[in-house]
Length: 244
Image (cartoon, rainbow, N blue to C red; front, side):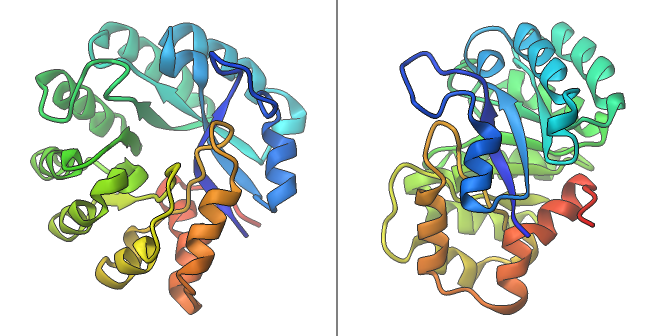
């Protein structure tokens, strides 16, 4: 069983062969379920992208395999409140996606803090883009926000050692590994120093081919409960997904 907690649906703003091929990509790599955000929502227009993704998730072919993130822009919280109220009750959307760079809302900003307070009140997890030491700032927001559960997207990328520190400081902060680079030993070092219950699997498909994340995790030679927790169990528990 494999659950990908960081994937995308819809075309990108540049030519890509894999655009729109979410299920085909999942089948190729044996990914059973994926939680996806709309690329349109992340990059351009959150409400329009969320609306398009909602239509796609209602397709019977996607049933049981694709779940959605409601993408929100911290600088447009009225839209976020409306979309959360509309899409979370459907059961097809199980979390929130926030891209701090595209929205100009870094982890230290009052806008992101307000957005994550909204997420906490909605009772669902949030996947937040992190890079470098920003993962430490995200951990502090998590500590300051009761009930918030947040995933550090890319687990800080080149700042993965900051991610270790962040996860050890806040047990409601989760780490997922996707990144366009694959430094030797990165996943193994994180897994050796972070509670296995805080580790998830993500690929950044369809922006990045899943082989990158699979190769990085395989190189860590994880076994037993740790491997199972990263592959699917933590994600199923965090998002309340049915896996039977």
